[in-house]
Image (cartoon, rainbow, N blue to C red; front, side):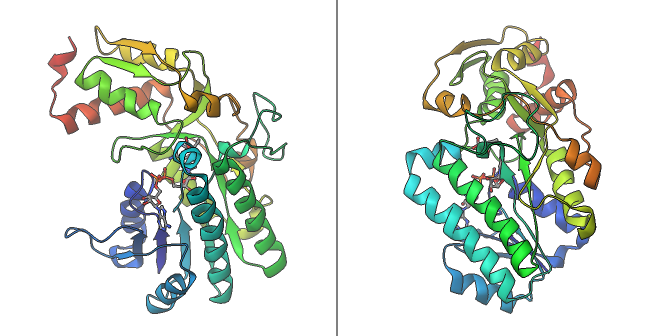
Length: 317
Ligand code: NAD
Ligand code: VAH
């Protein structure tokens, strides 16, 4: 039985159905800090900062594997660093400790390009590199990566991690991160044909589309343990672009779409992250690959967001 923490967020909203489709409806327990809604099945309320509740849930549902997604992302973390510290660091420690005590088979913890900092190389960053982040999010995620490696080496706990770039998706609208503009821009483009971007026009960041992000996480989960040399985090990305380049791609498809730029504190966060990372370790050791290039991503996003907002293709002419 697989437990997913933080399952109501941007990634969990799509990972849970993906896992249910692959391993069976009744094999997944989703959980988050919020109360269950009437429509959720196989869901429990679970605060990862509460170790006792976590251990009770592991026992009660006979959990064998954990996908630990609960977290406070970069932008929200800079607004409330204390919360980010408690959820990201104490929460991850609780998950690892509970996993060790209950002999959990595999623990999957997504990390992030937020672990990098201004001293990291700007482009083609390798998996093993300088990690000196300047956000509370990044600091807690570096600590989580090191704990993952520690639990693997010291206790033999099978912990696996990859460093996601910004994830683009249309199901759940992200609100807590620095890379969220790359989702938000599509809603504004489709609905209003106008967007004000909070990053500089030339702020280049690594990104990836959700279907590739889900497949990568499950490929890592299913890989043979002996294949995996890196336990703190494999770099993965599909492409890198600037807001102006993304605007260009959307404008080719939505006539009259306009953008302006008003950089805020999130641009300061993004300025400390690299422009591109090197996914070759992930490709070599567990076969990481991606299907969606930027054009395919933009086509798919516009199609699904238009459908979601009930706006037909004619609107774009
Ligand atoms: P999200 O902010 O959309 O979701 C996080 C979820 O965690 C939320 O549903 C929130 O309610 C839950 N949560 C917060 N505090 C909690 C607590 N104490 N107990 C239980 N749940 C709690 O984030 P996401 O984008 O889905 O990210 C999931 C994981 O992937 C995070 O670890 C994040 O660092 C990592 N990641 C995400 C991205 C991205 O672009 N989305 C990129 C890199 C890494
Ligand atoms: C954030 N999307 O902006 C997340 C991520 C790639 C960075 O961790 O905080």
